[in-house]
Image (cartoon, rainbow, N blue to C red; front, top):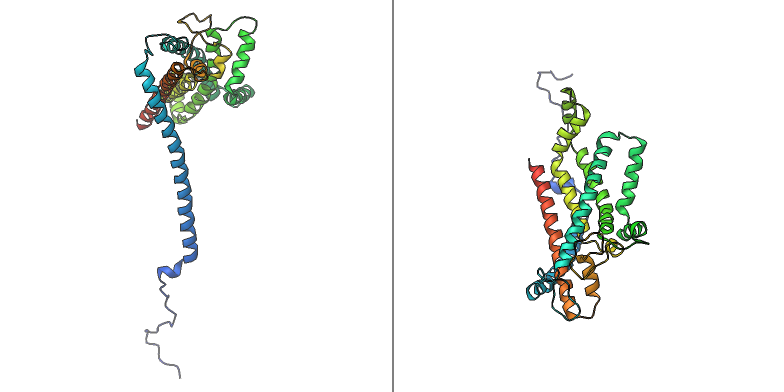
Amino acid sequence: MMPANNGTNTINAPLPVKTSFEGRYNKSLYNKRRWANKLGLGFAMAAMVFGLFWLFWILFTLFIEGFQGIVQLPVFTADTPPPMSAGGLRNAIVGSIMLAFSGLFIGAPIGLMTGIYLSEFSQGSMLGKVTRFLNDILLSAPSIVIGLFIYALMVKGQSFSGWAGALALALIVIPVVVRTTENMLNLVPNSIREAAYALGTPKWKMVTQVTIKAARAGLTTGVLLAFARITGETAPLLFTALNNQYFSTDMSQPIANLPNTIYQFAMSPYDNWHTLAWAAALLITTSVLVLNILARFIGGRSQSR
């Protein structure tokens, strides 16, 4: 006879078994992954320390040797001297400034306009694809190849000149500015462009008044990085501007510059030339460092807005 059902029947189902934390994971696998993680982090830290060690050693040696040359010699008030004579780097400093700014003024506008075209107007056209491909080739081309090209174009059969050096540096500036300009303009949200179109703004005005202003800090950063790139270039100037022991501002003649002065003085057997080479190297390194810090400051300031 079946027992009466009083509404209090319970189902004899097994209760869930509570397992400990150790039972929910594979301890050996966990330990293996933990040691692999520690090993990877250790290798990464060792590689970073190894790289920073050599970097700080180079900068320390450069600062000590270069600072001695700046203190002991009239670096900013005298021209490059003959062997075993007192002198400075005035002509080389002025020549480097003239060459770098000339190359920047020639190459930066071309690079900016090309980058604006690739970002705003090419729209997948064949001309845009070819231009981008050629720009990538020029960006990866060795600087000595650019120097040889300008040598065959402007120097061979004529004479070395500052304008040839400026044009060689401009060809280095152009691809850097093109790439940074295109990337910075592509980062501008399309919603800003659509809002300008909704207000009836023509495309040329939208580009000049909206997108360029929105990416102004990034464009400035790209130009500064290109300027820092050409500050210490030696190979293109060896075939174009050459060097000049005397003070000269005539860009149609060979003109002194710091990279070639370092190359010439470092290979000489004279101690005073070695000291001036260290001082010139410190000046170039300091200028490149300041330009990179300024570019990062401008870029970081634009991102914080």
